[in-house]
Length: 148
Image (cartoon, rainbow, N blue to C red; front, side, top):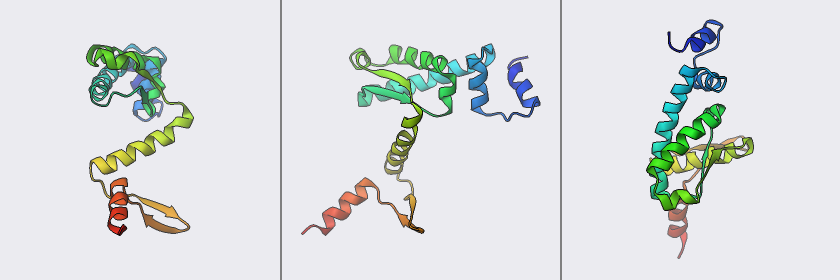
């Protein structure tokens, strides 16, 4: 029997969601902790690749994963230490988003994803009317086209 704590929580009516596994890992369940370390390993490998390309000063994790707290951070940091270029990881800070940081981070991620992957335009609700939002690239193009 692996993940007995997950099975028990589900029997008590809790839905199977990542937050459940992260919470149980933080509470000391060994099977859930192994899962979180595996998730952290893959996030860390991906983060190290991005660090090597973009050279950020700060890496902030946000979302349900932050329930696992130091358990996830240790796994991510370990992979960054192994795979990121030494000069880039020297000044890198890795942490979890504070509650007030989440909305801007998620908004920024949506904007990047929308432009990078050419997702459909997002709609904003303003004064009762849905308005289409231009991507930054479209805004620049519109400005350039309207300039004499």
